[in-house]
Length: 550
Image (cartoon, helix red, strand yellow):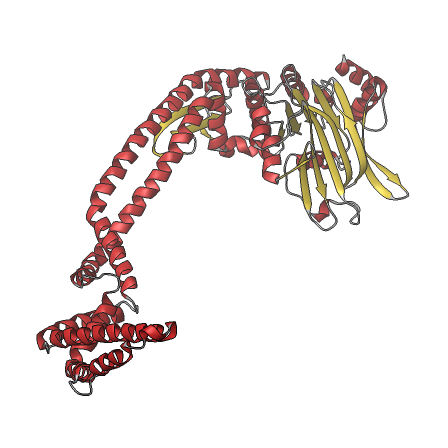
């Protein structure tokens, strides 16, 4: 529950700090005194967006803090999930800097506005006049049914499977789209792949073919030069091998005259062996070289094929062509197997759809079962609020599509008077009737939702007399299980509070500011008397005020 609210430099507020207790608290004050400002400040620490216009003094920052007792409300999982320190007394703080930057904190840890809003939703339900129109919204109406039906677990299971279904359905759609696009390209890709496969590509083949082409193209020159080389080495009179043999023979007799002669002899011997080996290799190469125009044509054809493929695929290496071949092979194989993949994915979609349908059926069954109970309670409570002939027509019908909250369409019609035809709430209910219906529904929801604090902002607008008295009693009864606030203009409602606060304006040297204070017993009598009869306090108004408080 809300324990303390502190507001600095916000709208007309300089610095206000107010403490609250459990039970039913009413807040009163003249029109324009700043009751909505107080509520606006609270909304800031519950995650509402802010701007520079919120600052009273544009040179100073605005700071709003709200302290909550949360130990009864099983919020530890939320704190763990968002990596926050859990404290039984939790402080939400919001700062708006003169630069326009806004900062949010939970127990002094910085948080995003989304996290603050999510926590605020679990701490306070602020009902404004604008929110009364939620009553006409199907999602809100469905939420009421689900609360009474205790559908939380079913909705959680449904949401989990629905998310899976959406994910798998997207994967199926992606496969089907791929198939549609791939079918158009399949024939062309197959043709390109066949070309590359026929080329029998392998690493280094281009270099090998280009080398072989050069040899085959210049066979006569190669043979001529090999022959000339062999002649120089093996000529009987002037051949290098013969002359080295003579040199070896000439120096052989010097070996015994010293190591330097022996070394020289060994070097000549080594040169002779290497030269003789070169002569043998030249002879072998010469014997192996021959003109082969058929092979030359084959090599030339293979090279031309490589060059053409490289030009077509805008590459300059066999390695890149191999990569393209593998990519095309994968695409062609994927298209060839796409039908089986689509079939598998469709079966997966069907299986998950059955699970989603099963959860949706449980949700729907729970809703249908609680309709009579809700219908009866609405009629009983509204009868006590001056609407004895109010009746509802509530139906849950199967929908053709999955929605975020199930697979139902809701018919929620209303008739205020006996014999009147049923119609949509927003079309047939007046503002005062909507307020009474909303209060009734909120009082029912309070029994099923573990919410610490409920705040009503002038929910009693458009009613008066005994009906307003009864509305005050309903809020008073709600406060038996939760903290309830009511911002009100009606003395009948204000008197039902265990505590009453007054919001008022105060004029000083620095200008006008909004203040709030808790009223004593005597001050409550005067405040209620003024609400009943105006500033000139009559004895009858004072007596009536005392009677209301009793």
